[in-house]
Image (cartoon, rainbow, N blue to C red; front, side, top):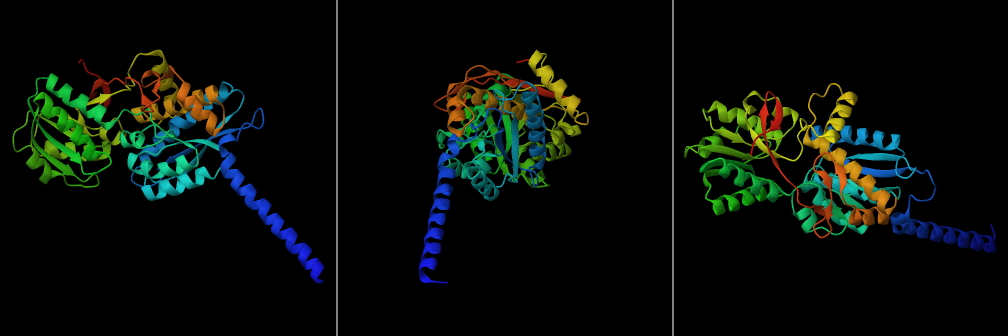
Length: 388
């Protein structure tokens, strides 16, 4: 091959490489304005959730609710004629995996918003990646205030904060005439410790005596040593600040060592709801499946029709169902691009919600304005409203 031909081919290759490089850069830069190209192109939301691992049960609950909501949205015309679809990635709700998932979603120009992760501990490390990609991270289940407080305009949540919940719980317990309480809480920095800090600060303020407080491991199978210490002061009631699976084990062992006072703790999820010793437990709730509200009952009926093997419809399904519909409302308001859906979140008001009745975000905190709690009690495996 002659030198002129070589030079010509080399120049052509360099030019092609430059075009490809610029195209790659443009893909990342223009992702925020993608997805509006055709009248009926699909709008994609990403889902970062646990499909395997310790929190897989929550990932499955979220998926069921998301899929139901997508079916209903598309049956009603989608987003201004655009069908909606979801792209799922298994994060295992693990910080290392959630970061990798975030990188993948940011690089996908079709994805205009990502739901997740299940835990704040998995969501927060991924936040800088979503922010740099100008991709809205909707941590609808993230109660750690740091998710939004230390986040940017790209982090939003429709969850109440840990502090909101446990300040309310301390006040409610005191209002029931309880003067002393034993406490266990998860020894996790992202959730359990902040939950206890909020509970203790409010308890100290209102004169609710904590006879003893023990930090426990959420993966433990034996809580009896900690429980024995926690009830040694003979508290009138007992509170566990934790999740459903650990609460199920803990309340069983609490009753086994002979403690009979009211148990404040648990979650509306299958492993806890089906635990015999959980009967009579009390928790604050935003969603109650037995609520006679027309919208709530329409959701419950549709969910049970689609998933007849699932007896209970919990706050986890309701929260995911709401989140999908809120994201759709935001896209309708602002547009089906990354920039558009962010604009929509900043503008939407009074979006119908099966959890809150209606949703309006505080644009400063990027959380729900004025969330309310309802005391609920577990009776025959079902959470029902308890008179205040």
